[in-house]
Amino acid sequence: MDADRGMNKVAEKVLGYSERKVNNRWFDEHCKKALDHRKNTREKVLGYSERKVNNRWFDEHCKKALDHRKNTRLKTMEDGNEENKRKYQQARRMAKKIRRQ
Image (tube, rainbow, N blue to C red; front, side, top):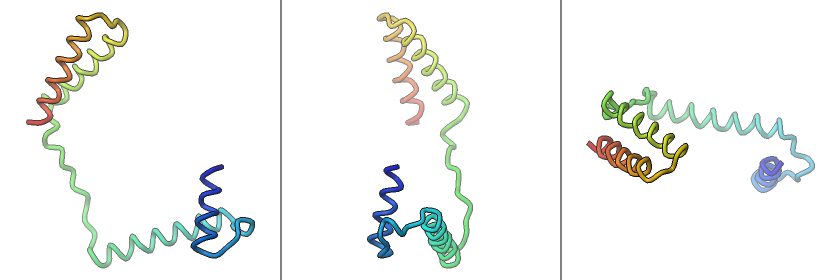
């Protein structure tokens, strides 16, 4: 409900339409057309390029550390004794150290 009201206010300010005259479907279509036009123009000017995935740092060692951290967190949440808290803090530090490498 609030999102529709916000879109109507935008339409009223930008397009000069009153809140009663705004048809949300019409407004959504025009917003989509504007975004598509912006995307097409950007691709024409700058060219299209695939998004590069840069997760070389996320290897098997990192995955194991994060899994260990997750498991110790779950154990700590089940039984919050001091030993489990200490193990969880240690696992957090180790996972953070590995991610920074």
